Length: 42
Image 1 (cartoon, rainbow, N blue to C red):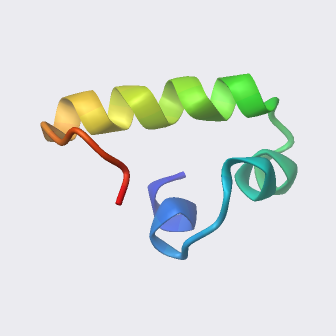
Image 2 (cartoon, rainbow, N blue to C red):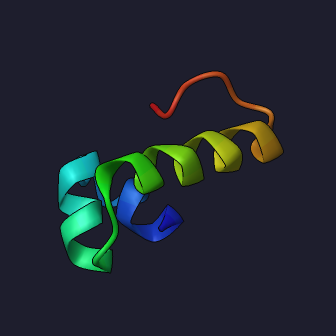
C-alpha cells in the first residue's frame, strides 16, 4: 500500500488495485501515518 501511495494513487485507485473498500484503505493509511509519525499523507 505504501508503494501505491508513493505513486500518487488516490484512495479509490488504491482500493480498486487491492480489491479493498475505500474505508479499509483510509484505515490502513491512517495506521501507516501514525507509525511513521507523520500528520499528513503528502
